[in-house]
Length: 288
Image (cartoon, rainbow, N blue to C red; front, top):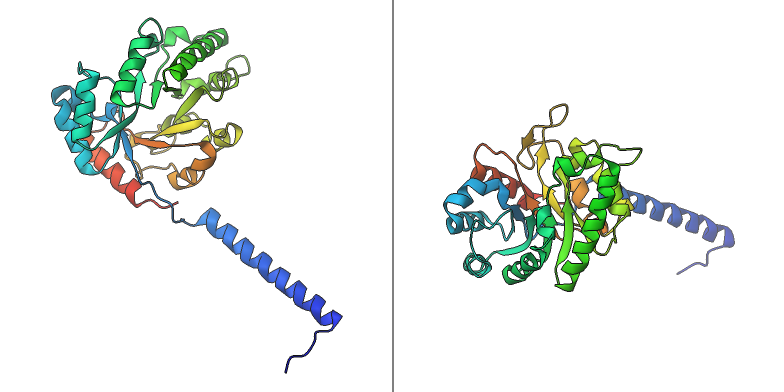
């Protein structure tokens, strides 16, 4: 037979229930912040600069090897004299897509319309300026001019149906006149037009935390270069998972950042194919 609770009993019961719920919620939050989750990368990409020597010798064979490892996406760093039509056919034969390509800053001039046409023919979603020449970035005023240049190019890219992004190294984080060039680029360009491809190795080497930029500029980092560092002081580049960068923690914030594509890269691997295979296997098993 059920017995009605007194007012005192109800208050005690509610306090106990509330405390228990708070405990469960805290446990869930701690689990989410400290332990691996159920998320994983369903499509892993590779920046083809890693296998550039092989690409120069055997363009289609190299892409076939990349696909055989398990990669679904590739990011170009040069087309090795192949036409957009040829490239698209080779990608299709190997069940690959190429969401992005690196282009030199000089492509933003008279060659920009042709570059955009080629991007559409190949199937790129983004074109990424990967480097600013040293002679063009000596002062903060120079970075203001670069921001203006990017803004103009990004408008033209949007009109062609292509996104525009910039890929960082570490030099963009060296302070100039109390500011950093990377922050200048982000602050002085339209966040909907000038996007970022964050290189997780270089920003780490520069002593910055990518999570800070994800929080400050949400949705703006559409791509990341996934490369690892053995840590200070030398920051020797290594295969993904063999170094010190906490990719699980970074990828857990991928929605905040806006990340759509993850490209493995190693600038100078001893064995390029062994390198991208090891990185792929680590990322394929990573949970965050």
